Amino acid sequence: MEQFLEFTTHGFDQFMRYTAFANFTIGHVVMMLVAFAFIYLAIAKDYEPLLLVPIGFGILIGNIPFLEGANLQIGIYEEGSVLNYLYFGVTYGIYPPLIFLGIGAMTDFTNLLSNPKLILIGAAAQLGIFGAYTIALLLGFLPEHAAAVAIIGGADGPTAIFLSSKLAPELVGAIAVSAYSYMALVPVIQPPIMRLLTTDKERRIKMKPPRKVSKLEKILFPIVGLLLTCFLTPSALPLLGMLFFGNILKESGVTKRLADTAKNQMIDIVTILIGLTVGASTQATTFLTAQSVGIFALGAVSFMIATFGGVLFVKIMNLFLNEENKINPLIGNAGVSAVPDSARVSQMVGLEYDSKNHLLMHAMAPNVAGVIGSAVAAGILLSFFMG
Image 1: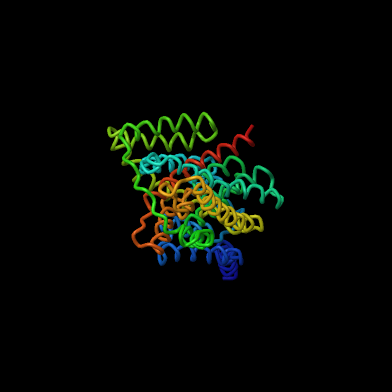
Image 2: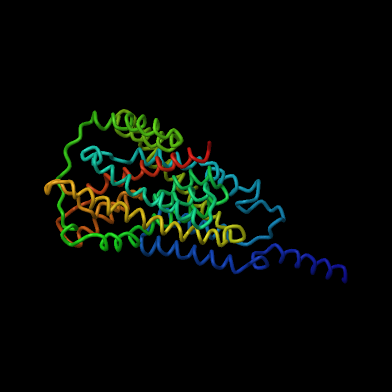
């Protein structure tokens, strides 16, 4: 009987050691609260639910405490675990090009082709990346880490994952969560900056309707775009190559099945895998550090600088344009590559001041230009540090 009691007691103690209750820390509580916030914003506020629900639930999965070092092979950082294998696509930059393939297959570059000068707004918004890079250096980040953190300013989750997987693999989780968080918070962060930088008269500017774009132009654009951008920055080829490939699948008219697969089933599957594994990578014992908090704060700064850069650049452009060709500065925010949310914000704010002034089609031009711009910026930064 005594042996039985001893065996039972030992077994119960052993069982308790392996439960989440025995390994729970305040860090896990903090990360679970973050997860609840993400899920709430996605469901109650409809902020990027396709991203925030997988990331939020992934944070919950990643923060179920377990006995580390027991070789249970369940944590995302434990070799041999299912989550670790799925996370391989993040840490080695496999998922981002697949996302870009889907984005290319669903993107219509017509508005950009009809008014090519709007591509300059997408370029100007990349100021957030290089501004944040400078700030990160001043804060003591290593140059390659500063570059990886700065890309958050492009508001492009896949590009942020791609660059950080090459330059700062240990920071991928913090950078990816920050990038996707600010993509989701576009409707909250951008409007106050847009209102601050524009006058009532500027907000009411009505832009000329875009010209009609021929089918030939649409087919040639991904070919010419690939050659121009990747001859300049070959380092961005995995992203831009897939973006333009997806677009020619869409515009050629003869590969509809492939384009449909890329923009529907494939991008949905990859989005699920990215969201879940990025969320799970916020395991409190590894993720919750002062550096991660600093990255999150710096990401907000870079995103705001990008919005400032886009809006102010439009105001400068208008100084050189005649009255009928002036651009509404409210589309300057769309230079960041949060497609199509930042373009929708341009539309939303514009309608507040003139219910008949629809800016969405104009804002989509700098928005898709921002996707290309952030990938080019990533390629430039990559070429600096991978040599």
